[in-house]
Image (tube, rainbow, N blue to C red):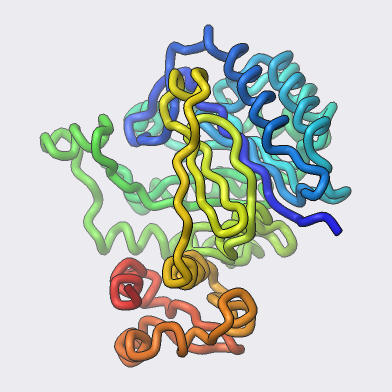
Length: 370
């Protein structure tokens, strides 16, 4: 019997580096696209196996939609040749509204891609400018309409909260503009100001001021309430979907299911070993090996709780016991008592899950369990 796993493919090219981005992405390297795809295909051949069955696939970045249609077509052909895909596999491709073309979507539709994730981020021009995005909202509308014209109905939009100068009315406006496009999925991420980014430099210098903690919490509550009123179910701290349209690839990652990662900086998880390909584009093109981490049983148990608590359903004790050979209480013992007593986590339907209050201080809960 084949083992069902996920597949992640990283495309590191961008038209411009966004102010908040610390991902492995590179602007001005278009000349490396063809050799990069060749390297990806070689890696796919190396990691393919007749014993694997791909149940979810995700092409992320960077900006995958910046790849020329011919190169994307060649990559998808190679993936289908190297790997066996489940008949109903979920196959997502990230897209930037400023770079999506009909030819690119046509290449996706010739293959198995059946879900698109658009980095919309915000409705307001001033916020998109501040973020360094190459698009404006009319391009979001055009890109979604184009996807639907090609028959791709399963569309997700990424939105950002807690941006400098962003207000609660801005969040209302963005949500209603997004809902008008009838997406099946929305990701509402709080801004994290990462070291080494333009955002970090501007905030530290005082040029940009972030909303205070109470305002950011109100923005998040606005998302939860508004999306609930429109039939969306929150299934993870930052993710909301219409019934049946949660991102299966991400859920599998949060449940510690195995996946193959291809490309620069791509991570993978197979047989208890996590690996990461070199983050530098030149190092990846040169064929430098991935770094590997063999997880101890304690590491694996903590990962199950750390990742699983992101989901609204929490961590199933039965699934935890099946994976690790002992219950959550056996694994964490006394460390569970304090967050339970403080009302940050709770037992419900045989699962350990964060309470609403616990979601606001998730990191503190994990520190207790460490």
